[in-house]
Image (cartoon, rainbow, N blue to C red; front, side):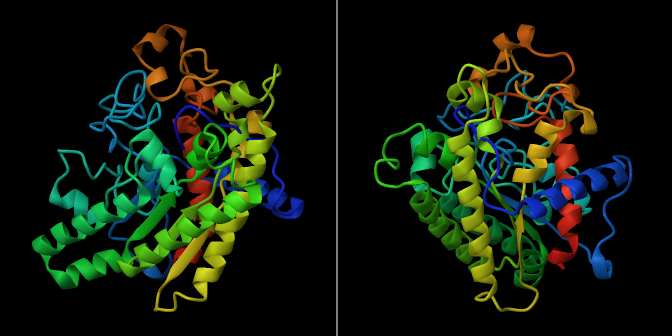
Length: 374
């Protein structure tokens, strides 16, 4: 997800029947999923060669580490439950891109493309180009001084050239066409650009802004497709208004979910889903799969029904006071106030879910949409 500003609340754009179905399926898949079992059995005995990832801090494993930005997580208490300590992941442990690669049987971790330790084998099996605090709206990355979505595509082009130089055009084409692509961004557009800065709100209402960013999302997917991507999963926005920092900033004295942010997130999701539907009629090359992955209702289920999933705390994060700390504000000085057991918390910091929440949500969502990737 993103840095410090953000909030969400109750859903409104999908039917209540659909939302109940999603929540039920997440609950069923959760209890049928064993953390110790092997990767998913893929349809048609397929093998996925790589997972490539684009987006923001939800799937950034450390690309921001050497950038002049406050959107970083390469220091404690980030990574306190991660083998080897902090890496730049905005979590106490793994992030969704790692879990997705594991689910598809590719590898345990998806490294940052800009990590100086990245080797050829890492490129061959997939890397993340994601940058914390990025968004579809170009203004979002510019304001935070991070890697824009268009620049992430440029890094991917560079990566393809490196792979091609090492293994040749034919094998590269196979890797690129058979890989899974995950795109996860948009929350910073809502929490940071639209509700925190005055520039977009002065010219766009919620519906117009969701149209505006959907245009950029569509262009990104078209460009990614043009580079050879064929299996693309687009992760929607969560109920941003319900994350701890957004409750604090816009939820009033009771720290309720920030309804306006949730409304924009829902409108945003409806437009992104529409983009997917439209592009399906345009992208007609064989084996092309475009999937919209809803995260709004599954995460909302964890927040509203914590006991079902083994959580105790939903309105504050584990880091520091849990009210607003995220990124550079969740730092070593936060350690004395931080919770002892992050597995009891839906949120790790003021903006990002805990590793346990990711380990519940990610496999469930992938399993629900597995056949759509093939």
